[in-house]
Image (cartoon, rainbow, N blue to C red; front, top):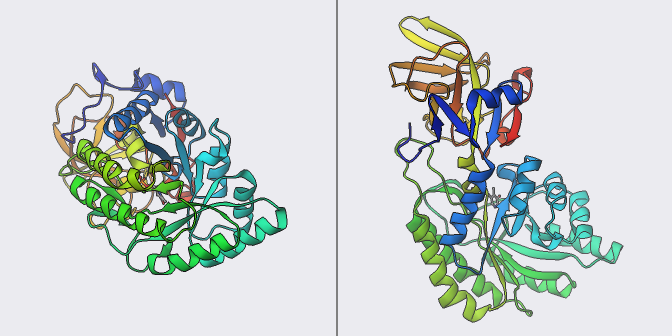
Length: 405
Ligand SMILES: *Cc1c(COP(=O)(O)O)cnc(C)c1O
C-alpha cells in the first residue's frame, strides 16, 4: 500500500464515509461500484482554501467526475465550475451556482453547445478564430452579448506533467503569437471579453515546477492584459495539481504551491488587476483521493505457480488502474482486500478483471492478505477519471454503480 495513504478502517473492514465496506456493498446492492466520500471532498476543498491566497477562487473541473450528486455537493463548497461539454454544462447549471460562475473550455465545441452557453451566460473559453466567428454569429442572431475569455496556448511547456496540454503545437487554445490580433477582433465585434484561460497540463506532483509554470502563466496573462482595451476581470490560471498513484510518488507539497501563488498575487497580479477574479481549476486534486472502486472476488485460481484473483470489475470501469489511460509504463494503483484490512500480506497475486483480454490487469504481483471468493477488493485513488474515463461498453458488461456516502 502507498506510504502516503492511510485509509480509515474498523476491524477488518475499510470504512467509506464511515460505513464498513461489506455493509456499503449490501446497501448499494451489487458490485462493482464506485464510492465517493462526501466528507473527504469537503475536507479537501477546505485544505486547498487554507493553503491558497484568500482571493484565489477554487473551480472544480467537472470532467474529472461528473456524477450529478457529487457535482451538486461540490458546488456548495467550491466557487465555480469548469465544464468541457454541453452535458457537463447542464449539470453545472443544475447547481445553485450562477451561470457566470461556470466556464466552458475545450476544442471542437459544437455550434449547438456554443449557442446553449451563450444563452446561459456562462464564460466561453474560446479556443480558435473560427469559434470566435461562430460565437459572434450566435450573438448577432439572438441579440445576446456572448461572455467570453480567450484560452491561450502558452509559449512555454510545463515539464513533469502526466499530460501536457500547453506549449508547442496544440489543439487547445490560441497560440500566444496570434492572441493580440484575435483579442482586438473580439473587442471590435462587441463580445463581452472578460480575460484569459491558460491550462498547461495535468497530474503534476512537483511544487517547484508548478510554481514556475504559474509564474510564467501570470507573466503571460499580464502581457496579454496590455493588449486589451478593457481591464480583464477573469484570469483562469489552470491547475494540474497531481495526486500520488504509484509507490514512488510523493504527495504534492500544497503549502509550497500556495505560498508561491500568494507571492504572485501580492507582487504581480493585484497591483495590475486589483478586482479580477483569479481562479485555479482543479479536477483530480479535489476528487481523486475521495473515491474507491469496489469489486468482488469471483474466482481464485492457480496457473503454473501463479495465483490469480479474478474480480467482477475491471478496466472497462477503471481503465487508468489497468495502465491503459495515458500511462507509458504500467504500474499498480494502490489496492487492498477491503474486507481483510487487519490481516498481513501473505501472498503475491495477479488481480485481474473479468474481461477476456490480458490488458485487464488491476494488480501485477501485488502483496495482499489471502483473498477468497466473496471478498471485496478495493482500488484507491479512483475518484477522478474512473467511471467517466473508462470504456464501459467494452465486452458489454453492465455499467458500474456510483454512490456518494
Ligand atoms: C482536464 C482539465 C482540467 C482538470 O485537470 P485535472 O488534472 O483533473 O485537475 C482543468 N482544466 C481544463 C481546461 C481541463 O481540460
